[in-house]
Every structure is written in C-alpha cells, then in structure tokens.
Image (cartoon, rainbow, N blue to C red):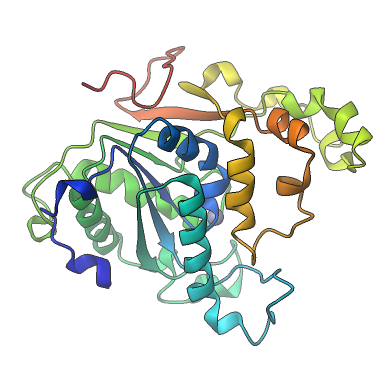
Length: 296
Ligand SMILES: [Zn+2]
C-alpha cells in the first residue's frame, strides 16, 4: 500500500503529538471528534489512522445509488473521512487498508480480507510503521472488547495494543523504521453520565421521540463519569463535530439525532468526552485534566 512506502525518518513536520486509531471512517468523528477538534484548536498536531475501508456500511446519501455505488463505497468513504479530518483540523490521516468485517454474525465476517480475519502480526507491523513515522506521544483507541461488539472495533483495540508495545522495541519489525516509544495509551470510554436523561424535557420540546432512552434499563449499572481518567469538555466544538459527521454523507442522514439537534441542545447532549488511560494503567480514582498531562 502507498503509505508503507513513506520513510519512517521523514521530515519532522509529519510528526504528530496525538494519534487516534479508529476502526471505520466516521469513528474519528463520533467518539473522538470533539477531542480531535479540541487539541487541534490548542495547536497540538493530531493524526488519525482508520483501520478499514468501511465497505460494509450503508449508503444513505440521496445523491447515490445504494446498489450501483456500493462497489465504490470504500473510495467514497475515504474521501468522506478526509473531508471530516480537514474540518476537525487533523494534520495527518493514514488508512491501514483492511476490509470492513461487517456487523457481528453477518456474511461479511467470512471474507478472508476482513480485518477480523487478517494475520494480527502483519496488521501490527503495518500499524507500527505508521506509529514510527508519525511519532505520537499519545495514542487514543477503542477499549478492550470494543466500544460495542463490532468485530472491527474489537480488532482495532487488539492491534493497537500490540503496536503500542512493539513500536518502541527495536527488536521487532526492524524493517518498519527506527523504534519510537509512545508515552501513553488511552481508550474512549462509553459512559452514560445522565446528561441525556436530564435533558429529556428539552428533547421532547424539540419534538424528538426519546422512548428508546426512557425504556433503557437502569443506567447506574454502567461505569460512572467519575470512573473516567479524563473528562474533556467538548462543548465549544459541537458545531465543528456536527459538520465533520455530516461529511460522512453515506453514513449520517441529515435528520439523524447526531446532527439535527438544535445547537444549544446538541452542545449539552454531547458536552463531555470520556477517556480511560490503559498504559501506564490508571490507578483507581485517578483523574487527569487532559490527554497530554505529564508529558515533558
Ligand atoms: Zn465503527
């Protein structure tokens, strides 16, 4: 693939401070969009790696034909993620180049080139090459098991965890460039902080059917906001994130809950992004003000 040819000792203007490693085009904008916009606004150079082409996604763009344009979906979604990264101020985007595995227990899982079926050592080597090229201080990825049980989200964590360890070890993947030790590894955290429940009157007033939320079992069963290592206020980047999501025209219809809320309500509904530090492992109750805390 093209990116593999880039020398790992490239010019320093390729280096990034923070690298988000995400399974599909659009995952950079959903769980990490506000975070990327925040650090870009703070003049921190950010990068994104997308593991798969997203070929198994739907085509919701009314200007496209869901059948005739399906063979081009990988190409279409690569352009969408490029546009989204431009909106979020991301400096470097790399495609890892694997095939979307599809949702769990669907026929796409059987594809030999699906990300879930590839040799994990080969995939780790590919990611190590990118890490050594971009030299991030901090990596953000999926939590163990994925933020939801999609095979590519699960695999994204597995490959990132291995590459995080391997990138700094000169003995492994010597052909992938000089070793580079990343300082910290974080996972996005799926936390219900109660914000949506408290906003139910506003959602109803804006005409949204929230019965799916009201039917959910007791939210106190999930991890609390207090359990996250980093709680980032991403309210200032609400509109930027919304535009990045809308760049994914095939995936995010204009009337989607994600992008159609009135601006004030959207800010409050998506106010905080949560992250847990995996390496070095956070102590119970440990909190950091940001993902770059403690870096010299
Ligand atoms: Zn995804």
